[in-house]
Image (tube, rainbow over all chains, first blue to last red):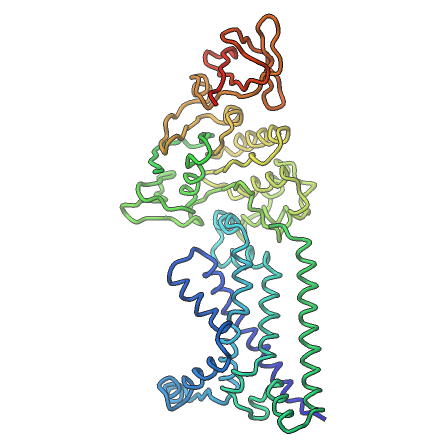
Length: 224
Length: 269
């Protein structure tokens, strides 16, 4: 029999990452989808970095940053009594950074695909930027929002390199399902590894199936 | 091209802003609405300064009290007809105006319809109703009828005139369609080469033989008395064509100088 903790931990990590990223990504994507200045290009490049960097590189630098032996980690420990290395919070921050483009890109491209007149019409009716975003823009890019949410969730579930670098392999704390598979294979417990792996496989397939069938339905009702 | 324009408009007037495509008509509307910032100058409406470059004063579009009808209507697909119009009102405002506007624009039966299920003309009416729902200081219409077929356009022009009469809104209509301006506007402002060249009544403007007011069409027959039948869009007119030699299929234009539809000229292309 396998331990369920890695699966619960994976689920908790994926859900928290998705929620936090959604809250950060919506205003950021809205800002990025406006007129392009040079500063925005820089931010855009930073947001996209996790797409091209090996997870171990991100993990390595986060590990250095979070380490109490270095300035940032030391400061966190001194002021807030928080240590991020080998902890769930550290894992969560790393996951948020690592999955950034998966949430920001779909929302940004959804917002850019709307005609600018939609936003202007709402402004001309006296609505604030926030009212316009929440009542006009976001409801009209539901497929993009769902894509961002699902991709971030699935991507976090499948995370390995960053998790291993930042969290290590501490049972109940940082051992997620993908780490558990690696661990079980290392110990020649192929049966357990297979159970974890097949659960992840089925979960990923189900998530993507839901996403594509919803998007197919929305595509048929597309207006702009 | 640099835009350098100046005009004073009386409250309650219906202004036709006329000019060729690319003359800068839409840009002027967008500056009035606050979507585009002029480099210089000022905009003042009912003694309130909306924009003043020298004092770095620039009201946000939300504070300008404008109604804007966009060329693509910019209706919100996530709302039905009634919701689109009611969106213009603030939370505690009475919704009676929505029913009134639905009636004026002939949309009462379509109130619960999704925007996607409307024809172009119906969408146009929703956009118009939404733009006037909060009684703006100025109603700005950016070629609202350009994508609509002829018969529907005439109906919508009647609705526009009716609404202007009923609510006495100062209205600026951007159009390159002379017919539309003649039917609707009290005053026509002609934008050419980045300047307002003329500000006068439509009758005077188009009577002066203004080149842009000419109707163009093709000759489809010429009879023995020298009268040519010219096909203009879907209509035909018979005009004297004795001044020079014309052939069938010649592209011609009829100008209305002296209010006579007589003078026929071949175009030089």
